[in-house]
Image (cartoon, rainbow, N blue to C red):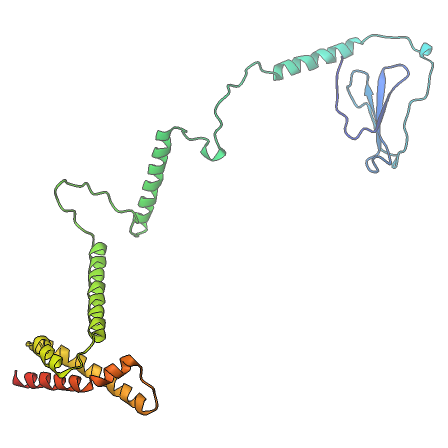
Length: 266
């Protein structure tokens, strides 16, 4: 083997009768553009001829000649010299160093240490860079500073946690007050005069604040009974619970009168 070459878009080729040259051609209809003829030396050097004046080119071949017209010749000294130069060039380009197999590293992680310590160090450096940028811009960092805890000592609470605690306590108080009011409104009133007097003696508060609260609740219940009486007068058929509520109207007025009497005496 003397040489090997790569000829692009070659459709046909052929050796000359004296075996000192060979031809390649780009032909139509296989290739309808860039039709040409190239001529090379027998050792692959060239092309010594590149003809492109025929487009389209449908066929290209050597004229036949008897093999006896040309004697067989070996490689010429110039061809041997060119072959030796090519071999030396290839030897210089080829290295005997075999690359050492290494673990695969993703493109994003290349150029950095792949150990766990290196990853932790990189994360800390990135976090420190964010904090420094935030301090330069005058903005507060979202990461709370680390406070070393002292065993047995209560930790100081932040301003935000104190505000949230006060909000939760206020909401709890409002919820308890609403539940107490609903329970008071839903509690059944006594219907018999004996039970009314007994409960009045037990339940009527003595302090002024409690008397005012009870007075307000009684006025609200009396208003509900009055509205229900208007609806019944307009043709509403009361249910059993509504009839029981209407029957307690006198008891509510009596209790309200007693409370107002006590308030006037204070």
